[in-house]
Length: 115
Image (cartoon, rainbow, N blue to C red; front, side):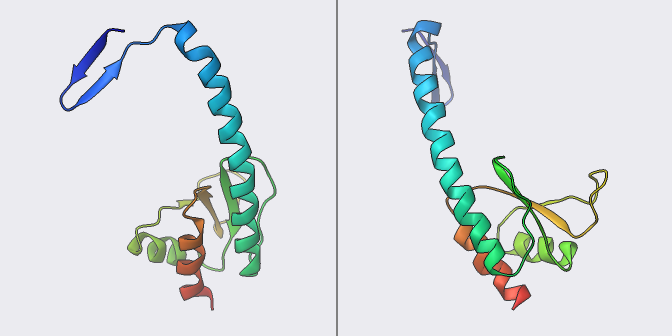
């Protein structure tokens, strides 16, 4: 296999036949793990008394009393969430967070503001 050097990184040139089976396997593992992580994260947010929008996306949409205050607090803890006040039809108390294995840190940081 030919490779392309990029500084300290090395990119490998793969053919379609090299990747087709691996892609399907990786996608299946990712989606299976995502559903479990999302369910746990959703339960954690609901446990704080927050309203969580049901779905299967790799992010969770939820409400908080003051989205901008919460976003700034989370940012100070190194946790990124997205404001949703720019989404047509959503009120300004919604936030969106990516589903990540580190979701308990999100819950812990939010608890500091909510409780």
